Image 1 (tube, rainbow, N blue to C red):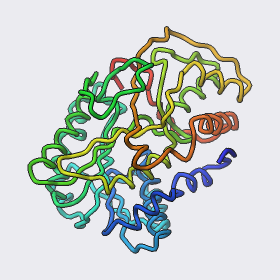
Image 2: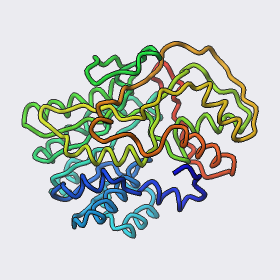
Image 3: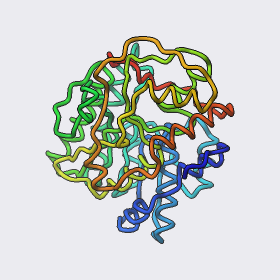
Image 4: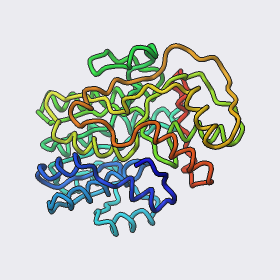
Amino acid sequence: MGEGIGSVRELESRLSEPTAGAVQALGSLRGDIIVLGAGGKMGPSLARLARRASDAAGVKRRVIAVSRYSNQDLVAELRDNGVEPIPCDLLDERAVAGLPDVPNVVYMAGMKFGTTGNEPMTWALNAFLPGVVCRRYRTSRFVAFSSGNVYGLVPAASGGSRETDEPCPAGEYAWSVLGRERIFQHFSASVGTPVVLIRLNYACEMRYGVLVDIAQRVWDGRPVSLAMGWLNTIWQADANAMALQAISQAAAPARILNLTGPETLRVREVAEKLGRIMGRPVRFEGQEGDSALLSDSRAAQGLFGLPSVTADTLVEWVAEWVRRGGASLGKPTHFESRDGRF
């Protein structure tokens, strides 16, 4: 998979291409799948991947994608791909009560960017909404997306935070995500809802992600911040495939799994490699610290194997995409923030 990706159409195909592990997992899984909060950056490709993996496994099931759907083109695209889109405001409890009964729930709803200055809505989406959904689907299995931001900064040489580490969130976003986890853990412990919490640390594709942020700065001639001098990232298709595989890991009490690539990447070295590929000089700003937001994903790798795309390949793909002027979602990750303000 070392060759680059030449178009949005090819990118969308790659993002929904199921791994062998995803095909095997969805072949063994029984029942339909509903994706709540499916209209974000990862949701559409996860729903398509679930459809393709189920078809490849020869399993007939509904794959339902729930979102408010401000983009009607996305509704048509999902339907054309065999996914059943259902418009729904998840904060409307009566609307949630009317959603189909489904045994497998992938929970992707939440808010990160724009949280500073909009803290009440952040808490409503990240900490109140999980309770609404858990009451509705109390007998279903959940894969609930969370974030490595709940850990806080750790020494770069540590290999990253582990699932057994105590949370140390910084900023209201990270605190509200921990609130999300606590609500899922409460329902899992009190009524036996099987849950696996996926602490994701930077999924990346060609149009957004930490590598895209760095590449765009290099291409534009802007300085690259060294405030967060180290990072983890993972190809979005691998993150989605592993999340679907994780449905079988849902348990009561809730289980936690870190999800990211195995490499600890140095921002300075990533920027320099991007600059070489794109033929651009690289400038830096700020001081490189010895701590960063990093996660140890060995537990997930033990269950699902290594990602199919390495960080080196992902850097090369991103460099070529940005150099050619490929499409961007225009949603920077603000990964360099050390105070949790997004």
